[in-house]
Length: 427
Ligand code: GDP
Ligand code: IMO
Ligand code: MG
Image (cartoon, rainbow, N blue to C red):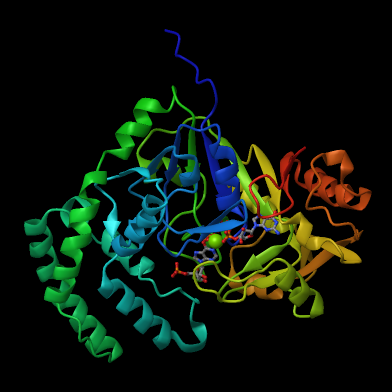
């Protein structure tokens, strides 16, 4: 029997580093040709920015295709803060662009006690703190995996929700108060009253996202929007300095509910490296250049507003990222931020003791010893933000890009040179 071939492979957008690579911008750009955009992991600890006609749209839960009025899906891999999601929905509804949204009934809901637990444990960890955004995301996933979560289908059913909440809450309160010595003044009644209103408003969005994706995957153009970044993956990231969910491409099947198949895996790579919060960062810059990149790239958290740590591009990271994700091609973002630097560097490999290590190691003690060995590049002075053609980029700029392609043996298909939707070059 001959299977009907899809007109276009579904695309999955993956952050290849520690998040904030510019996934929001890329999803928005590619959404022009899409029918469905599916956010499949993470919570409102993600911050995806879309900039269109000078206006900034920071999104944490709504898929970044929202400006195009396409079908938006939130799958069960996502944990939902109902208040935050409603605020995002209201924002677009008030602009006469009500999102065409479907939320999977299996999505878990982030509750106020998850946030209290997050704040209490981060404080208790002292110097070892992860740098969590304290939005309760990790604790919501803990409950989900421990089968004590409140799902979207429960949340919109007042009777069921009440039963679950009033059983779970006293245990959480006890844990927060007795383990962390925090006073919890919030009551189950307070939470219930506030949540009822949110549940009532969100109810109309319920729908089986797994089924919708399965039915349309070979007929329609679908974009899967990943949150966070490969090195924040709960298993393959710089554990424990990670988030609490999987971020690598293979997770999309279990976080939506469809079988393995061929996808176009698009790796979004910032032209340098950044990370927010704690944890190892071998190519981190502690000097004036790091500050200059951070200032020019406006490297401040979309959600947390924290200053992001900045460093050079790191090939050992990208080699592992490619092995884990299987990139079809890369999109390089924020290349314009590097304009004006006289010299640039890319880490080719790490020296650990007497060994040359080409792929990012998993053990933190190895990472602490890793000395990046750099390739040097000449910079360029030209402002490249309005360049539209690859050949019009300065030669030194093309040398930088071509070295990445050659070293990784992965093609670069697009290069973003500004935050605006159309500040992008097709290579
Ligand atoms: P995400 O989490 O991967 O979606 O990335 P964020 O939105 O958190 O952070 C990326 C930031 O860089 C946002 O402020 C974007 O508007 C901005 N941005 C994206 N691409 C480019 C680019 O090519 N050049 C510049 N200068 N800014 C960009
Ligand atoms: P996007 O999708 C950058 C980081 C946090 C913290 C660690 C754990 O915008 O790329 P958590 O709140 O999950 O307990 O935080 O993970 N982190 C991110 N850093 N971009 C993100 O998402 C991030 N999501 C989580 O800063 O160090
Ligand atoms: Mg972000």
